[in-house]
Image (cartoon, rainbow, N blue to C red; front, top):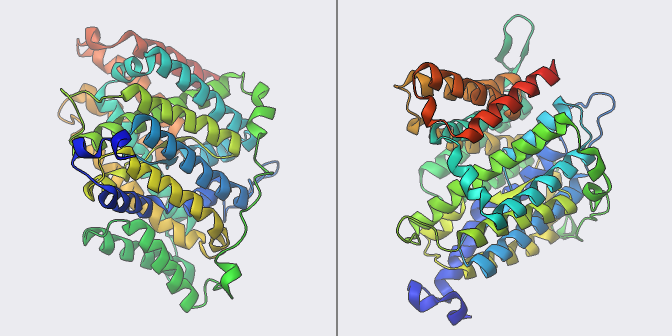
Length: 443
């Protein structure tokens, strides 16, 4: 094992890699409870015709997809990078595709499967890396920041901190509502933990908020061991559904959905791989060794996750916490994968993880993602306009896809007017046409 992962070459050992794997797991364990809440549209009154995914099945699918993806990353690519269903992509799946477009979640899962299969082909042919390079850096940054603000907005509205208003569209909610106060308490706790430098602060913040909710009587506490540790929830409600509904994806609307899954995961993965490898000193001549294996791990995890019953599985930036704890090899990922499998037996805790407990996680993760804004070239109007419209359109239209579409339409226009048309990659012109057709189709 030491020779396979080249411990001596990386100056590491079992103890350090194990601690790194545990650290990464704690930093991203919140996804086990947030993902079921988001994908099941927990706490939201569904319009007629929209059905809700089974929360227990999503929990199991989330844990298994994370374990499978992380294990492949560890054994094949040998990187200390963990994977799980991604934040932002799950929100797009639930709030835009299912709730907004009215597309059944079964069809949406088929779209995730299609994106994963396309990813595998693009990865094996090397096209995926070339497409990533075709999208300008500033638009990549804007998309990441916009998704962050969109996620935070969802968290704020889910618990009544922000609410609808007939006169001003949006307004501050009733902050005296006990459940809203609990969510606000959770935000404060999580912020304090993160500012103090606690690795896994988001996860610990959820624990403290849940305990506080039980103490004040807003959340029913577990009555015994069986309410904490139990059998693994059945996958039957979601397993294989994507395969059964694959024939429903061949529409223009689903094409845009699949493209959005592709686009967001493209840059989630690329950004995470570079960030983690740079922090761990794993880059060689500014290039990532075994990049194709890492991308293949991500693609395979998305396919597996969609068949199990969850949204796109992607590399998690929280892996940097494990690298910070000393992780340098894939053995850390093997440890993290094992912990996700162990977590399967703690599904009864879903009952205490209410929307008030998950909302702080959504808000804080949104803040962290919005940090991308600092790197956008705001002093160049031809860049600032499409970047700003990308960011602002996501929360205001309640759609990640619409934000991407608006930005990708304006970018070629502003660049051409500025006389910088030669800098635009041909792929961007193709996306310009596709998104124009997208708005025509919506109309």
